[in-house]
Length: 346
Ligand SMILES: Nc1ncnc2c1ncn2[C@@H]1O[C@H](COP(=O)(O)OP(=O)(O)OP(=O)(O)O)[C@@H](O)[C@H]1O
Ligand SMILES: [Mg+2]
Image (tube, rainbow, N blue to C red; front, side, top):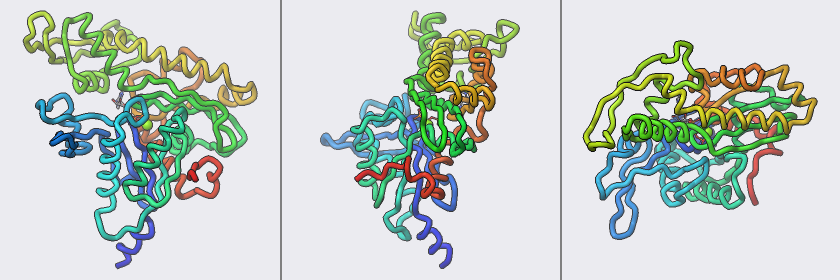
């Protein structure tokens, strides 16, 4: 009885609606859902019928027959397909709430810093449609910094770099708010695309998104290996010359070469942020270093590459993939202190 009562009271939630992964945090419980932002559906009589969402749907990406489509409704950090995104949000909220003991919850969703009013409204409407009573929006860099445990309410400059699937957001925070932020459309997806195009150009080999991501997460690196070769991985794809499946080896050095451009773009975004930061806050960042969050922060040696380029100390947050969800979740607990940055709309 008390269990039911408690989940009734703590129905408020926080959602990190990411390009690659969606996480749901329930107040008092922590992160209780973490699934790929993927939906598989069939179109019947012009209407989309959802077949699978999340983990199950991701298995279908790139492998569906003509009648079924598996898509990622979020692109570049914002909603690309409203109808499908709404179905996905509804599915996840329902999954979290397992019918029955829930009042219409308050939900805080984090949104990319650069989201337009139209994009914000779309997210707010989708979450409301999914059953929320009140929807608050929180800028992603603030959520990432809170989740990484940074002292963002202090009167000092703190720099956080969140490297997600769709975007990299660089922000300087002080006194609980954003002093400078910039979002570039470079993240894990762009890295996967860079690997695909490298293999096509250099090896005449066509690989899918899933294989490219696997190469990146297994041996991906932001720096040339010291021996000029590094680890080796067996991969499979389609030979573009004769059209048949082919197996080949790819070295870490090749992946480093493939990833050079997106890595450089991330470094440049950090440099631009430093140049645009007021001098006293920039001095704080020199003292305190830079915090990396998001899945892209796990790319091998990205911290080293960034340190070489910027001369700053770089740390990778604990639980880097969870930072934004944890930070948005904490904002539910500390709502009063953060009221000035949570946008509850009209
Ligand atoms: N070990 C790893 N090395 C490199 N990249 C990784 C690693 N693990 C995960 N990633 C990448 O991190 C990305 C997902 O990160 P994250 O969950 O932070 O993104 P997201 O929040 O969904 O996206 P966004 O914030 O842009 O909307 C994916 O592109 C994934 O391939
Ligand atoms: Mg994210």
